[in-house]
Length: 484
Ligand code: NAD
Image (cartoon, rainbow, N blue to C red; front, side, top):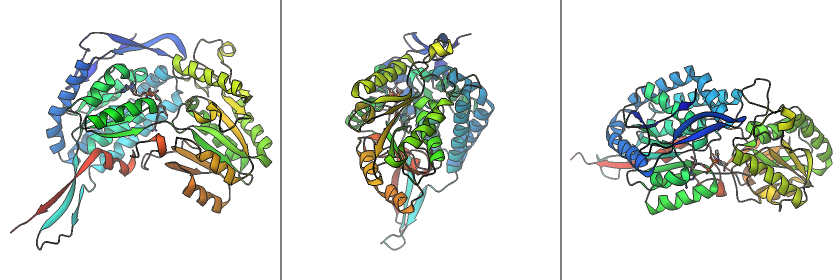
């Protein structure tokens, strides 16, 4: 049976005002319709923002320890619904079931982490120059937060925005990526079941290009948190500035790994492949360039190729499968175009890169992991975010050359160095121009209690997750009380 998803506004599930819907298909079986979501209009967004505004005062006034109880309850419900929600996400965007289950587990941890934030300090008492005056600072809610999320982490990203928004006293209007609108609705159901008061969380689906700006520009919205592509992020930032809103952008990456001759090469090959190919390469933190010292180039290439050969491509709901489809027709065409472009630019295929349907006797958006060599930093495949299973190998003579080439990019999300040399490790921590550094780890490794975000064009300079989230989701109020 096809799932039919409604918008959630002021505590009620309601159809969009124009009654139109958008179908969501399964990338492993494009003829299968997973469900339908509302093709909302600007007036639906307006209603959602009004509801969030009406609820903002009373929710913001509740003690954070009381708000924490709602998050705890949501965590418990999400845990119980883990398999169902993970399966929905796999069917919507193709990520393997084991990975979507991992995402739900992570989301549960995030909810519990932010529930605890409800018990931590919300201000500081400061010394005053005036005798007897009480001077202190308080963290206060912003009001209404608009949340716009991508399809690649359809569970964890919405939760790592919704949970801190709510615990710090904000109400929310959440617009998921259309591709994963059903998963988004199931997350909202979790908060509904947890008894979150009406208007505190509101949910609208629809094309970002049609309704995104109604959300960002709405006068009742006080802040926008966005994760997605640089091109959309830029337009959101412009409108947020024009309409005087606080905004946060977490954007793309072109993440490098450097492998030096003294590294544990087997470990490095395993983690570089994991970094590049986990989730079919569709992670903002995916490794897409690997700089390899020339003395170990051939050995490392062989180790990487051996790892890639182990992947079994197919429907991620099948437990034997280790490499799912890309998320949509659009992704499929983009990735295949980049493979063609790489060949035209003079790179050569060391492994894979072809579509994998014939082999699978399937009709999904399957592409074999792709390993390019003879790549230079100037090629577009080494410069642009592809967001697919493509890894570019680049030969270098030294650590210094690798670092300089790794930094030659507009992006600055994450980077890895594989070495046993402590001095070079510390140099890399200091000089790699990224928000997240890994020594002997894969570029995508991130833990929910640690700040997450990039430098340069990968971010607006803000950070998500951990205690860093308080910076975005609250404002300071400074108070001075003269008791005399
Ligand atoms: P996208 O920018 O196409 O879409 C992201 C969201 O923005 C979706 O909800 C979409 O509907 C909405 N949107 C589209 N046009 C809009 C507009 N004009 N106004 C307002 N909203 C609009 O990105 P995507 O394809 O869903 O996701 C892939 C991108 O996300 C990649 O670039 C990836 O690197 C990035 N990403 C970054 C991080 C991070 O934390 N840095 C994490 C995951 C993904």
